[in-house]
Length: 433
Image 1 (cartoon, helix red, strand yellow):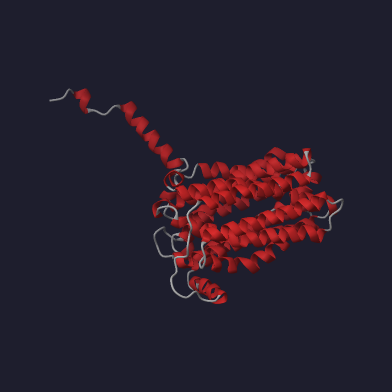
Image 2: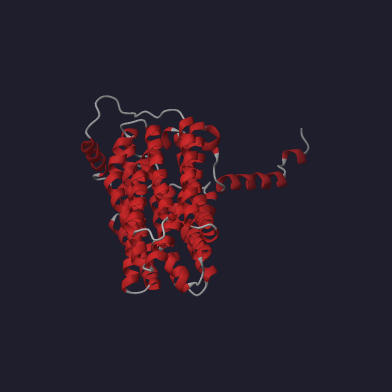
């Protein structure tokens, strides 16, 4: 018989084991990057090119506001990006279900690089016409309308199903690293070297994404037989949504947050008139939500254990709206305002992970490109409409009132949706969406 001390567990070892399990449950799961070569290539290529894109995200509004002094003119950038997004996104999703997704991604990245080169030309002009800058922004948006659905639809085929939420969380880390690094670097580049350099760096980074895509295996369509016409394919995507109130709610709740609670178009005027900071401070305003989202995404090991995913989305969007209200009330304290933007970003990334997981886990691969295109149209189009809404309200009232009223409307919208669609509030992972 063993001595009593050998029968009892080591308390220190037991504590270490619990701590290790807690860390694994909390910290980001890197398994998809380790086990899938193609996902790894897709992820790292996008990391580089998206950072460049977010440098331009600061440069274009800064240039337009510098030329016009008008918040409304900055808000119109959102409109000219939203229109081609709507026109081409649904078509892009249908194409993503019908052709090799890798080839489509290569073409779309080349289109985005061409848009950035146009902006380089505009920056080298003494006073470029606004229509020229808007045209380049529209071309970039049209390219994204083909790129995003194909990229999103490809991920479930690159990783095991039980690691899908982890892969989506890794993508959110990618986006948030870009949201932090891109605008912060962009503000410094504009201040030190000028707009042309910012746009040129953006153009060069697309080469990294194209090289990574060329190294990946082809991703032919899953569907066999005759392909339906594009309009028929688009209708099939919308027909799938009929009666699926949970899926529709994932779109509506994001539109609520982005249209009413996205003050991005007001950052240039707030940086100059409310906070009194230059281009570097403007870059920090753009980077702060991404910094919060990055921290939130790095601590998402727990998301694959959450079952009440609809409820998690509603709470996350509520926190987003409250944080935007706090940002609007903090225009005399720059660091506090940045803190509220960071909280908003952390809430947004949690919402995005759960919304994407609900969608990607419940849609068949033959329709995934089209449903992803609707999702991307909402995710990318909502902030553009939010830019326009924020610019119009600021023009009619004031930038601060625009921010605060938008946050209030966002929180109210969450409450209305929770009451109107109880299925979404009660949605449990594993149930049909």
